[in-house]
Length: 378
Image (cartoon, rainbow, N blue to C red; front, side, top):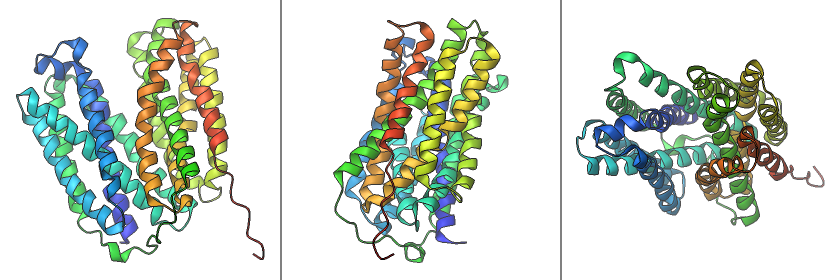
């Protein structure tokens, strides 16, 4: 087993854990708040704790460079992740829960950003990086899909969130054990010495990932509300929209991993961003329920490959920090654009909540790096 396969295994399990924590927290927000006597109106503090750790720990970890140092950091925080999730699942007190969520979010952020960076800097080209990142990010989609399904099981509805965190703690231990077998010296394509940081490429990549993540969260976050309030779709069916979205993301990322064999990352990015914008416009324009479901499915399939491909193209910068920072920038898009989408509905008809996602993806299309011209004499 090569070191890249070992790294992919560690990343895949870790991404499943991270996504399950995020969507599990969302699906059980009120149950957790009730367990700790938190008013429902203040339950959002749980999100704040988790994502403040996610962003803060990534920023602090920018001081860590190099293959060996990054792998050491990953193993340390894989262990911290397991402990934090164990504490969250067991504690009867709010303060330990709060600290556990901060460290869980921070550990998840470090693992996602640094495993992705390692996959990019140890790949021989963008196509290989795109294939590997798309495959491992498919497990993020799998975790995002499975956690709400687990919590919806009727017999587990009350203790579900605690058992979910305990189970995820055990999975984090599995990831840690698999990571212990990765040997830095055995990577076939060891990263070269970093070239000077290119600010233009960094800004372009961070902006593109923030725009994409904002568009993604707008679609799967607001689609159930739009379907229920403005198209008279029954609540029980409307709430399945995120499930369909993540099924499409899972399948789309596996498909993208195959397509990178035949197409460049830049070409795929342009195609998918245009298809994503078109499907977003469709969701605003259609009125019948079947077409709404088709729109959600098309959006998920076209959105699926954009995040991995943006990340894969950061390797061309020649500086490993670019990938880490770009992953972190996605959190800015998730916190800003869904809020702006809601404000749009105050001045435009309700379905236009989803309309912001189309220009965001068109901006991604415009930001995609053109391939460098071939050198003379080659």
